[in-house]
Length: 195
Image (cartoon, rainbow, N blue to C red; front, side):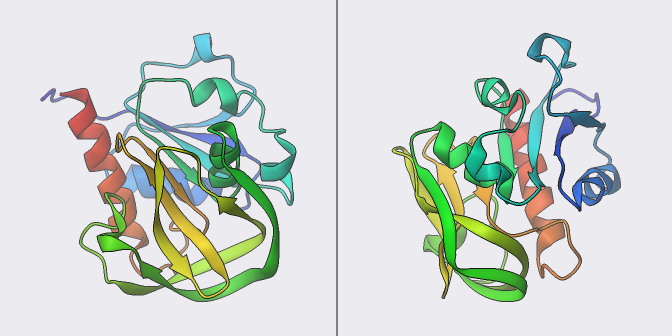
């Protein structure tokens, strides 16, 4: 494995907590920067991973996330958060819609079969921080559900290759009980993918 710092950038989709995602990666000693979602793919630096941030209301449904579709074609691990998660689901053939019960604030979720790679080492039941009017209701083919809450069936998803992850909630917010561990787990995935 290289001694060079991991490079994981955060795509700014207009979310209110994008800077917290960047700060969490900095805390974990990752070489990171926030980039506009309009950044051309050819202008990206050499990345080990990418985070698609949350965004303004409805943006995960409208598909107006700049070049995120092109970013999702990159051969690196990618984590989609909130709107990024919804966009990822739709991009790969799943779907998202208006939530029957929008979630704001603390919510308890339950892991499915250990929760996959992102939830590794965290509790089967845990509290996370929500802020969404829309949600994924159909996971794409080749993905499986990693976590659910009473009012949102797809709080988390992962693809079978283990390099695409979606989270409906905000792990970067302090109120998410194991948020730091989730970022650490994503960093580990990126480290493993570069070897």
